[in-house]
Image (cartoon, rainbow, N blue to C red; front, top):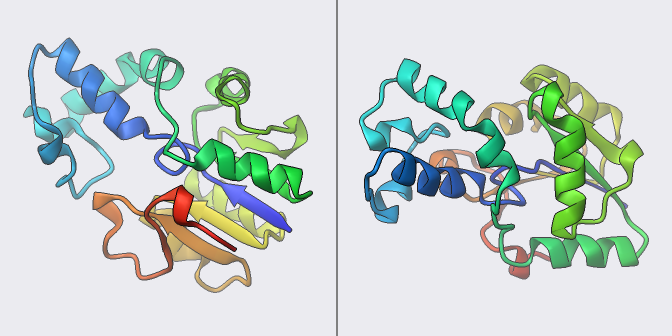
Length: 183
């Protein structure tokens, strides 16, 4: 079978990782309970930043957010390695900026995820991402972002949402914990 995965906030806990970095950089101690209530992908509101200041901060910290010690969600690495051992094809489809693609692919490999370079897609806008997902004729696809998931409801791929506070309105099957997922 062919499995497709978004990376950020689907396989790795990027937003929470960034939240800790923001706390440190802004010398604040906003609790995780505030993070867990956010209804947007963006985290700047929790720190009293408007969208312009929040965007500037995010962009200024991209290297640190993307390539430091961001943890994988529990069970994610193990599940993808199990799928690989069973002979399934694993595709990564991320909207990370083009300039970070090579470094992201290596970082994902270094974390222990099974990566084949020809199955790693990076650096596209949401619509391009959607087109790639459709072209790959995947059996399963996993993402966290409502804007992507909502456009995939009409394809034959089994679509799953990685449970996040900002995607509760999405009414498709959810993955709360990777350790609980079975296909």
